[in-house]
Length: 189
Image (cartoon, rainbow, N blue to C red):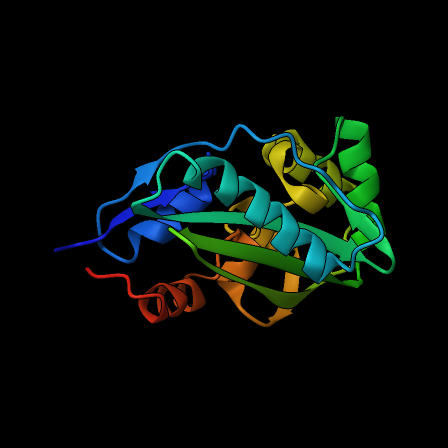
């Protein structure tokens, strides 16, 4: 018998990536108030947030595999969230212009008493960007709901010179590793 799978996320990008597994799943958006512990390393923070999301959905779905995920963009010591305004998006992109930053995505999978948590990290280097390029990109609206003010799977791809690591971790769900971890936990297709 096939196992039941739930994605605890409203992210359309995570939904698209999970669809690559070609198995049915439900989406139940986590209603958790994310608790950020600034003392944690980014790798620990994204796993903690992913765990919070998965746990909030898993408590009502004990017989399903529940996947929670969270992504964080880090430049130097600074964690970059979603911009609150176009001005902030421009400032973030100016800061990242011509530089390399890290993207951490944490994943937590829960099934009954089983819990598996991991993260993937990728480095992203932007081309040096002109003010015109930054303003044109911000005018698309794409940066406004993205950590670090860009989406690599959209127009933001035009800003990226190179990446090192799992591209899908940058998008928001390292799907190959997620698949392998599900199988290790006994998930049946």
